[in-house]
Amino acid sequence: MPRDRSEPVMGLDARGAAETSDAGITTGCLARRLGVSPTTLRSWDRRYGLGPAVRDEGKHRRWTPEDVATVQEMCRLTASGVPPAEAARIARQRPPTGAALRAALHATPAAGDREEPERSDAAPSPAVPHHESAAPSEHPRQACVGLARAAVRLDAAAVQERLTDAISTYGLIGAWEKVMVPSLRAVGRRWESSGDRYIEVEHLLSWHISATLRHVYVTSTLRHVPHAAPPVLLACLPGEQHTLPIEALSAALAERGVPALVLGAAVPTETVVAAVQRVGPVAVVLWSQSRSTASLPLARHLAATRWGVRGARTQSLVMLCGPGWSRPTEPGLTRPAGLSTAVRMLSSAGSA
Image (tube, rainbow, N blue to C red):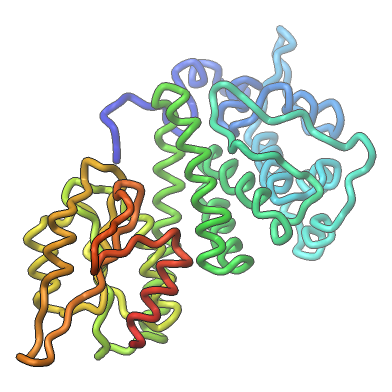
């Protein structure tokens, strides 16, 4: 959720704005904008000639818009697994051709062609290693690195491209478990450790993940889901604002032709009960991120609710999802171990 704090704009704080002039921006300002360390920028200048075109009278480096665009392309390519020397060659001749990029992804780094870790106290970075020689399709960790770095740069197009590629490579469930969740956790940990700075990075990443999941849900629903079948109802409990997990679950169900009715964040108790009585869902998924929002009485009430003609009444499976729930031991309540398990159980309930 948004917080009422004064935040930097586009990765630049007041100091960064002061370091910007008509002649370009300083190395420190550019490093904060891109989420890399000044040492990395100096290394790229020394090794690959990706330095600023302008130096002022005090011999300070000033990066022009053209210099910045070249370095942004370098960041994008290295985060995709392109070896730094090859990435620098392509970045200098922007825009790269598709054939050149495909060849670069399979290139082997030369001896000593390794970058210093791109870390900076001012910008978050994923808590996973960066394998420069790995193609994203072979290493999910590399996909996390690229996604998190794109978010740090506030590069919306690159974030969306990496999310789309992750789903294409790993499937929706694999992309959620191997790329999206680890990237969100890495960015979230860095956000917390930096004193609530860089909230915009997590918000950007969350928004694009949500947009990607909803796109899968909408397109799959239109193509595969029978309209007359009873749905799975998914809702966040009162006070619960974390909707990404149920968006991922609804998208995965839609891919498998299972109807899903998503009520979204912070659904009032009486609304959940009314929706169950109106729709008669095969299952109800209640998401709780923290114990403060979990409501076992509501779950018990839904599990005991029955409908239909007398003598043939039925009831919904109630699934408790999220870390806010303790493991249930009561009939009619179940708690899956993860997204894959939940999809399997709900698919079986829908076909029963």
